[in-house]
Length: 371
Figure 1 (cartoon, rainbow, N blue to C red):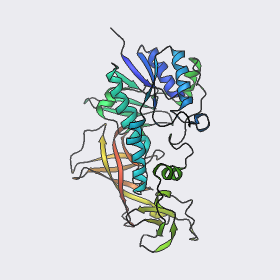
Figure 2 (cartoon, helix red, strand yellow):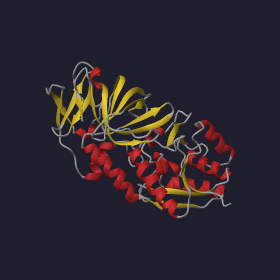
Figure 3 (cartoon, rainbow, N blue to C red):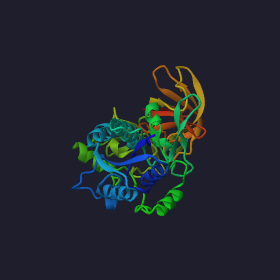
């Protein structure tokens, strides 16, 4: 019987390299692919910035593939990445929201586009070096299980479809980062001690504002800082400079710490409040994707744990399906800086139940609406 064929997305880093090694050790017919999604070869400086898809990444992935004696290719996904990730990122920031481009990249590029192309060349699966595990539940649904590593990446993967999960392998999900590096050493992989990539790949210096202005040729006008009652407190530099929960860079002399509590693009206002006003106990989310539980019907509820950002430890909440296709999460305790545009990811223990994109937040104590 012929070995199952798997396409491994190789970023040139240690995680995807060990994923390819593990799969070959397990008897799979492994093909390595690096996705060109953003960087232009004549301008990219991957060595300095630590990105994941530029010239140095290709060189490293090719060396690993040679060491493993597997076929290796570079594929161009720039058009789909620009359309689904970068253009969405710009739209969301200009709409006063704070997007998570990694979530969209995973769903629409690293899975949807790569999986389609991989299946077309006869592959049975795609595989990545993400810290998560694919689980098939007794009812036949697929979901993701948290990794034991502190680098657990299920938060950014909640949006994968059932079909995508059915064709996905994540061989490093049961290991810690230290264990992965030791395996790379034992296998003689040349990237065993390569540093992890940081920040968003298309903004390696972290200067979102410069990128937005350079990419669009637009700069949003200054406007007013206001409190929740609409009283003007000062002037802001443009709504794209701010995100909910932000304290630094406000340049307001209030005599006490203050924070961004909301952004209103329709009036070009940034709302400022005290620390307790940054907390909310209720949110709504749209573009819902159910993973480990059967999709709720309107009016149905379930108690789950929600993470509202990657580094959030999670908080219990009652999740209710609304008539408009959104979900409402009512938290057991108020959570800090519920940020429109970010993902809320729902967990049932260590398993991903689903998630969506935060579109509004309210606090019963302050009646503040963020949308």
